[in-house]
Image (cartoon, rainbow, N blue to C red; front, side, top):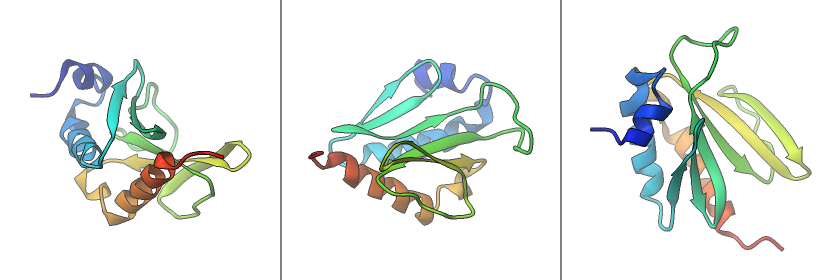
Length: 126
């Protein structure tokens, strides 16, 4: 049974709760990670935030009916067809967004990006 936080966060994407839970379980298996649920997203920390997952609040053009977004944060831009958006909100800080529609999307490519973001978040910023 999902936690009330997950149920509330994914109230408009209930079918994807098991997929999200698999992602969360994998991320929380990384040493020293924790999750914080907010109204619109789940944020993952290892010293600082390295990823988040969030369902869409409103329908978006050219997007599937059922999906959630995984965002991960790196010091450089990754260019890949799976990344639907990458923005640099601060110099040298890139936010990447990947759509998740099924368990098949939790593949080694995504997990490698998350692992890299996790390792970066564990480093002391100078």
